[in-house]
Picture: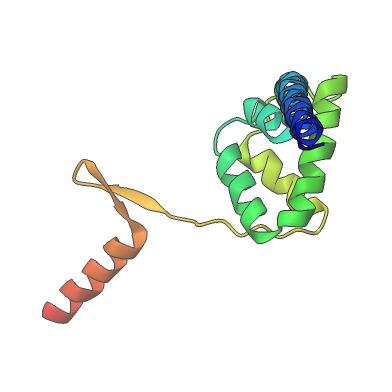
Length: 137
């Protein structure tokens, strides 16, 4: 009986190896469609292609301040772009206006630069230098 038992174990081991080989080959076959699914369009990437001057800056600020709401807006804008209802370039001002019109007050870093002696200087620096000079005089 021990010869039969060893033969049975050998056959079971062989069958187990075949099953593992089949499973691994199925996994590689199953992975191929996943790569084509990964090629599906990312709504955010499509929207970024439609953005103009400072549009990406507004979008990233909105995402950091209102992540859930911005995700829904990105999906809706993608649908409108895909259907052709939005064909124009969305610059930062238009996108900011959109967010504010639906009640999301996206905060933006604002800098005012002025030209002094052929170079741009921030208004904050200009005012602080002027007040320093006023103290000296």
